[in-house]
Length: 493
Image 1: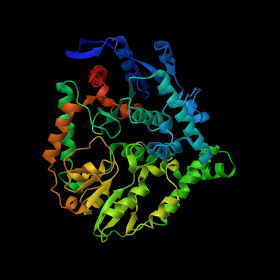
Image 2: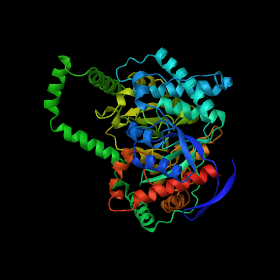
Image 3: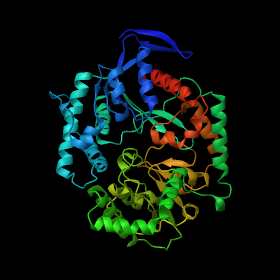
Image 4: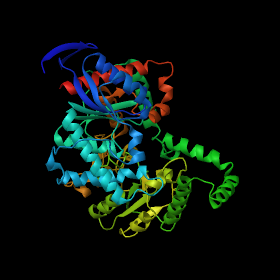
């Protein structure tokens, strides 16, 4: 392709005169469809394969008639990949170490698609191989210049195509959402480096809002006795559950009657049974006794992106706990608390946890599961250190001056006071390491916004969560322009 220089938004970029093609995996937000339009209208790139939220499908077929539009729901319903003609490309992939690593994670991601408990392992195995056959054939025939995800892929179909792209060397880009405000960062691969924006973030209104939010957030840690460690999304969930409890007795009676008379759908009956089994299994191992010398590990809600795929090799929490046992001193205990959302009827925690999980934790020496009502503040402040896969508890602990260890790739990776696990780390040195001050963490956040921050949200739930920032502001326009500039700049490097 011949190169030429063009000016976009005041930024001079070297771009190709021929249109790039890419595989696109957008969530249901309108901005992702608008971004595809903008990239196409400016002659930069067009999607050749589109696998995203079905909200866009009808519009996309009109806007991009040459793109292959794959129905996302078709995967979960049929558990089959679309038609393809595999001619043997990349035969080395089939028996590579990567293949078996990918297979384990992809099959675990299929928990989301098994509400009726009828997706057997032999069926998942075939589905995975089917996805690989389809994916390899698509990369061979369509030959995309890059692959773009609006967030880390956490459905088997997108994840398999993500991993194949990595294996064959096709550039992959995805966005990571911040939890404090509607901000994203672009990174190469799930655990790859964050990418710098083409120009420092300079919108004064948004920057002022961010500075105020960070200041208030960090200021809330000044008096831990008054601090509520539960994030806002969890408070909203508990409020909804509490509202339901106003009719709890009446509902329990109705549910038992409906369950007994088989009036509930099979899916709901299975979900109800599983939640009961999970709660009963957890209660058999819960202890109210908290040791003095311990590492605190709050469990992640599953199935969710925060563990798989963001946890990488540490996507399995039981395996991660066993590994923690192997690296900490023998005299140190592990204190674990279950995530409350696991038992929330509105969510799918019953699909992501086995009742046998709790029994298995008893085999790990000095591991204690404490009641969910136990104060998170007390657990953090009483711990020698905090360990998590990607949870913001690590950020909170760092702010409170506790050593924090992460095993995965969260948005706050690199924050002062938060250490990313490595095989050669010295755990004793980690425990004795100097903690970060709140002002240092604040400076880091402001600096990160400046060089890698992009305004906006990755998915509809994030957009609803931060809805107030979109009211009577120019955030939507700022978001689209920033995304366009960021993609053009990164792909053109």
